[in-house]
Image 1 (cartoon, rainbow, N blue to C red):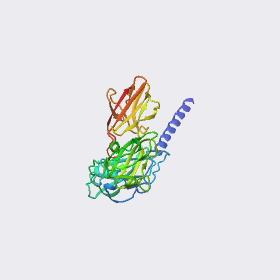
Image 2: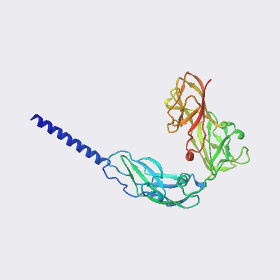
Image 3: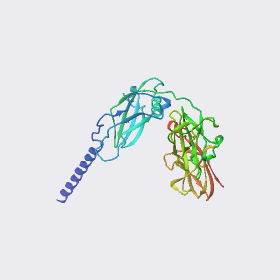
Image 4: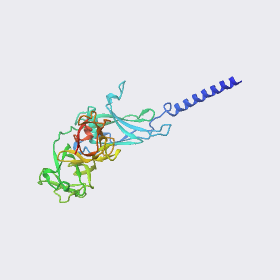
Length: 359
């Protein structure tokens, strides 16, 4: 009798497990999941222009995809040519843009869309077709029906110009003011640090002289030729400055490289920000360090960080997990130098350089 009971128990357990596995399968990959409706684009015919490249050129939106389990859904957008979306290599050459979890739209500037179009082989100043689809993923991926748009890319102009930023932060000396480099036609970018106690005012000069300059117009963000009103920064700190002479607008974004690690006060959680020397284009800090690790990261975040692949050198590598070892406590001067290109178009460089010197 006992043997029969044991057999019944084992059989019941197997049936229960089979039922559980079947249920789990139905809740995930065995369930049918589809896009409930088509994706939408803000325009089906787009002619891109370099002088409006910072403006939004395309908005892609899509419906929420519902999976059988309650969890975040990740979305991405794929762009491809009509000739590459069929056959065994379908979508293999596509340009894929991650959007994020539970996000149902994505806007692309003219610059971003132009790069996608030209990377896929569309010719400048000639209308060509791009196919767009949205990818949804949780435990498995599904795709929307594709949408086709016509895009006319532009040929990016090679630019090497500069404008200059004299202000209270450096005594209004235009000869030594921070330079903003032209990264696109009529669009300039640069970096500066406003020290504690310095005034927030500045101007924007076409040359290292006062023959032509811009001051604030109707608002602080507007450029007005030869205006006596100063532009104003929000307060002390380091900034990335962008100026668009096509639209006569400017903006400032908090931006600072910092040291991070167990050798500095914030440990691995909080960076100590460095200051930008605009004349040498070097980030610097003089501070007390204790024995421990040290590396570099941007804006107190791990999104962009550098560590040494070889700690015996002054070369540091993008996204490298290594760190320098600070052997003894004391006052140190630490510098960080990077090729400050436009990260939107070129990304951050694979290497930067640094120095760590005990005073």
